[in-house]
Image 1 (tube, one colour):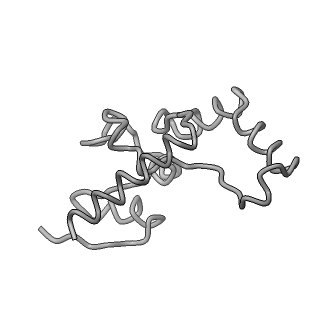
Image 2 (spheres, rainbow, N blue to C red):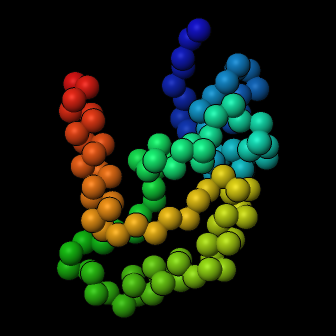
Image 3 (cartoon, rainbow, N blue to C red):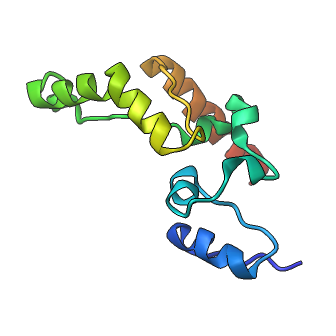
Length: 117
């Protein structure tokens, strides 16, 4: 078996000539791949998916910026979350983590990487 790294936006296209590929959910959805045909999905193990949580972050001096805070508020609106989940054909999960929980996840990943190097 040969593993060939490709740009993430090419994985779905390359799948036509490969036995398998690791494809991000947004690229799979854009390529109209059936998520139920995957041989593995990290949705079955949300702990395994933690390194891929998307977060909104700002510089410390922008923490009270009204526009940025309004964007976060809009993003957390149930209708926006619903549209996101629909767009990703059930391959995304909305999670609500505190800053401390996110920091703990990051620290755990850093510790794991250090222990393997």
